[in-house]
Amino acid sequence: MILRPRLEDVKAIGYYLGRIILALGLAMLVPIIIGMSAGEINPIFDFLIGAEISLVFGLILIKLCFVEKDLSWMQGMIVVSLSWLVAMLLGAIPLYLSGHWKSYLDACFDSMSGFATTGLVLAQDLDHLSYAHNFWRHLIMFLGGQGIVIVAISFFVRGASGAFRMYVGEARDERILPNVISTSRFIWLVSAVYFVLGTLSLSIVAMLNGIKPFNALFHGACIFMTAFDTGGFSPQSQSILYYHSLPFEIVTIVIMILGALNFRLHYHLWAGNRREIFKNIETRTFFATVLIIFGVVAFGLMQVGSYPKAALLFRKGFYQLISGHSGTGFMTIYAAQFANEWSQIALVGMICAMALGGAVCSTTGAIKMLRIGIVFKALKEDLKRIIMPERAVIIEKFHHIKETFVEDKIARSALLITLAYLGLYFLGTIVGMLFGHSFANALFESTSAAANVGLSCGITGVNMPAALKFTYIFQMWAGRLEFMSVFVLIGFIVAAIKGKK
Image (tube, helix red, strand yellow):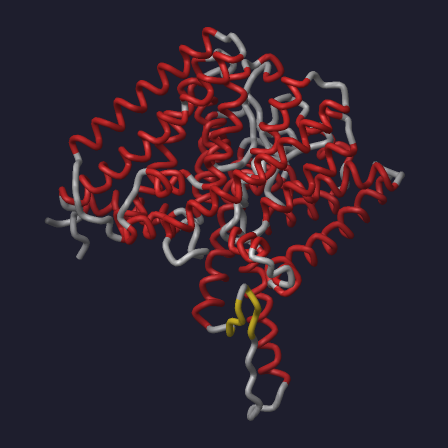
């Protein structure tokens, strides 16, 4: 028998959701400062309106739903799943008011794409967008990469157990430090240090490339936020192709790889445990799949002779592969070139790279390397049981910070999430094919949305049907949260409708 949610549940959810909305409203003060420094009047009012709506809405929820109890597992999961939807709706307000989005739905699409670190874009005339609005696009991607709930846990949530339940609901089940609040703050520390170093590096390269100092610093900050958080937004419509700079591309490759690594691994590297990067199952799996898939992509590109020179193959082929595998979505080619210049084999390689993703507890989406490594180890164990004598004791283990045995529970969990992602990829593919797109192109775009990548073969655009926009929004949301909190929210809604008192 399904029980209907109690008023206490609704109040707890509303109270903590209000705190997250409050944090979002305060975050809008940053683009206001950017707008003031750039002398932009209208964008300042756009963000003042967005911030006022967010702060008022958040304060009302906190006041009406005030509770002192910690969150339960169900409540924590629902707060997480709802916070991303509310962040999308509120974050889209200043974007829509700018006039660069055809409809509020388009602004919501880009807002979800930003928070979910996807990078698919529906903005119009992006090259003439204000500094304030452009910075907001990249800032929400930076916040989304760390995690909306991570922001709230770091500064607005005090209850340790409730914080942990929200932390897990946001697809992070690894604590770096004993306390989840300390873990959240460490994640911000890592991001802040890399932000300074990455922004300086990109800014220097941009200035050497002829960009004026203020614009170089602005572009450096924006590109770093989306590279490290494996998002894919860029200040210009041509993405990384705009810079026409090999050093710029190399720096972004380094930042993308850093963003694809587990924050727990960053902690051990900072602590001096350099060997962990060579022993860890995630990094070993990541670099192995990069090499294998690049072999497939290179073979496919050489078949059609798209990039005959090694330098071109690196800048156009390998760059796209790292961008897709890390879940970033930066491009050094135009979207139409995927469909027109890449062979089907090369496209299949790119789809596989996007579908696999980076590390768990990182800023990437998709299936992730730890699960791929565990599934491979479980398969290896089963094969050994078939081949070896019945009396043989077969034990497989993997190294992920520490040595862990491949238990049925661990393998089953990894396989279930993998199957869920495959189902999500094919859901968007079917919808894309219903609107007349080929199987390969529909699968490419669907995988990019569901794996939170942002590469496009040309399907994503202002004129695509509203149903396809809603499909991709759902994929970006569900893919970023890795399903569990989404399923809990769906169950909560069903219980509220059909449950008994």
